[in-house]
Image 1 (cartoon, helix red, strand yellow):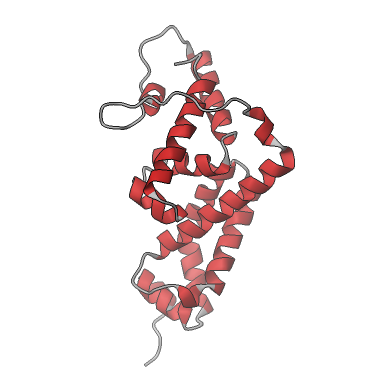
Image 2 (cartoon, rainbow, N blue to C red; image 1 turned 30 degrees about the horizontal axis):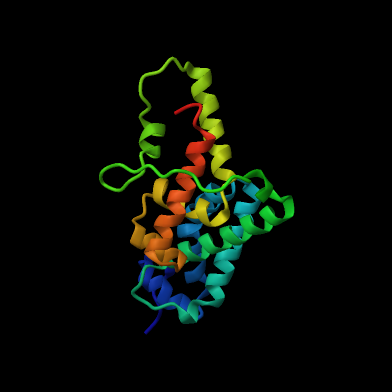
Length: 203
């Protein structure tokens, strides 16, 4: 039986044909997800060149690992895990190269949680109490937040972005990063503490 054209297949059909050696099917998967993978890499690195490299490396690794992918599972989730790992590796390399670790010399910070176990940091940032901050100060706060996130250790940054920007559950983050749920929560609390300390003049 002749194979169906790639453009007529859903994700599972494309994966099946790609696993069988159909390059057009794999190209269709790349076209389907390349913008989302690039966007994820850019959120992690805040660098266009790095995001491009990570996206390319993600699809290259996915192609050579297709034989190990289980048909029926989410192909995008699989790509997502590869992209996250590549982003973490890139952040670690740049962190070592630029010696960013010296910026945070102080240790742990107090952890504040709401009654449902969630930190109040995001609520403070998204819905601040009425204050005399004008537009310029609000813009400066946003810049400071983005800068503070960039300076987080790679593992904490990944967990924070997955939880806050991607709105992933603790269980999903644990699966993506291949770490225990307790480690996810611990890294998230440390990230929140460091961000709160950096932004204390605004909160």
